Image (cartoon, rainbow, N blue to C red):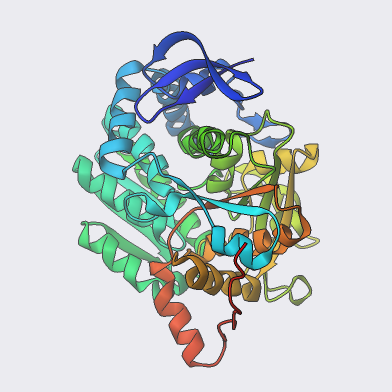
Amino acid sequence: MARWRYTGNEVVNFVVADDGFQKLDGKIMPNISQILSQTPPAADGFFGEYGGQFVPEVLKPALDELSATFERYRADPEFIREFMSLLKHYSGRPTPVFHCANLSRYFSGAQIYLKREDLNHLGAHKINNTIGQILLAKRMGKKRVIAETGAGQHGVATAATAALMGMECHIYMGEVDIERQKLNVFRMQMMGAEVVSAKSGQRTLKEAVDEAIADWMAHADDTFYLLGSAVGPHPYPRMVRHFQSIVGWEAREQMLELCGRLPDYALACVGGGSNAIGLFAGFLDDASVRLIGVEPSGRGLASGEHAATLTLGKPGVLHGFRSYLLQDSEGNVEPVYSVSAGLDYPGVGPEHSALKDSGRARYVHASDQEALNAFFTLSKLEGIIPALESSHALAHAIKLAPTLPRDQIVLVNLSGRGDKDVAQIEEMVERGEVKPPVLGPVVAD
């Protein structure tokens, strides 16, 4: 079966053999989007029964314009040249894969590898998507960009790319999240963005999305809504997946180069699900790779203070798309909670819902305490400070690895770095709410 090999600047046509990629015809392709252009996912806006476009009539023209623009440019050579150039020279791609030898030895099981999206410019995977969407906004002639953000990473990436393109930028962020992510708020403001506080409801990510959509409805003619996760009405889930898929395709090639084979497991945290679907995209056709998404179970599933949508939710409609949703018996959206500001969302991307139903991906959960323990453990054993979001995936990895033989490989998408979370966690430690784990020595092989 023919595949495409990403080399950092180009895509080469290869065929998959038992020992990895072998050159097929030497043909050089100028863009990674050739991968997706072979069999575009969700061209009709649906992943099985999930997805779609459930929006007021006033937004349909804007969505139709966006969909047409995306279809026109996603495989356009000049668009892809500019996209790939910015990923390389502005964001710093490709990001490496790193073997956590100390972590693997400490837990005495499978080998744990990290896809280092934390090493992107601005410290997270979000910039892959904001670069792609801002280039579409430029081609649509939009002068004003709006976005929602939870932990602030998408807001920071949007502010940066808007500054790069000389566009006016407004970021909607829940009042609670503004307080716990002050560093990212200041970073956005430094780059010229106006941060708008969402003060309704729980004052977190859902409300930020609500207010961003309201803004877009009022200013759709001149405003581009740069949505940060693989959620929302069509074409957003498909579009975000497209731009984030570079994570999975890079990781696939890097694992073949480093290990001579694919990983046995690929793990990522799931809130809306953009980093997870980006990683999964590179392995969906490889049945030997088990895909696992890790949701936040917060203070425990029984407590009601969690955001484990795929674990306890049921299908419903939110923010213009159909997917699994945390809702009560009357269909009202339930309050959600996570120690991580980027994961407390009551819905999830529609492709994740389809993957859950099909059984191709499995979705588990990690608590606040498990994520915090993973945060400190990676910091102490490898000198890498992970984002609280990524720490949920890492928490499951260090639970899974000891149950597996040492020749098994677990790949974790480290979707962001933890600088933004340090002040929050320091305050929690000082208040006695969190106690860093005491780790023993790493036993040498």
